[in-house]
Length: 112
Image (cartoon, rainbow, N blue to C red; front, side, top):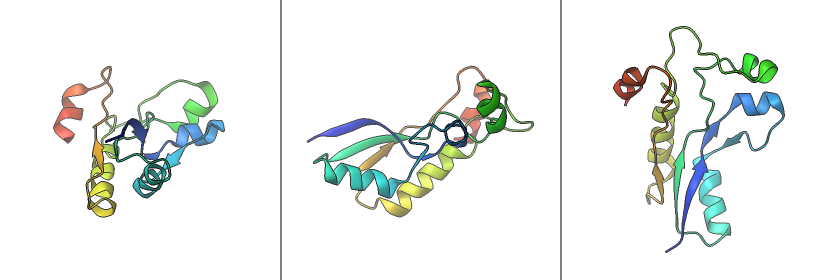
């Protein structure tokens, strides 16, 4: 059995605004890539710049600035879990939650 153990699913608006690619992928995209390359299963997690950070500051300055009232990955981990439930009934994709070890870890753990 072949595994892809490092793949991102979701959206990274900071990547998009900086002109980097890929900046987005869906679970459906990942399953199609697995099939096209003869890979049986994959491990996926959200992109690295979650929506809790200001993407415009990141695109302009390359710095990470947390938006007021937000916690890193407070939406992305939930969205990915929902997407996998909806689009991967065979459970070929396994999710790893993302964390920012430098910012408000107790709140991030509470979100899970």
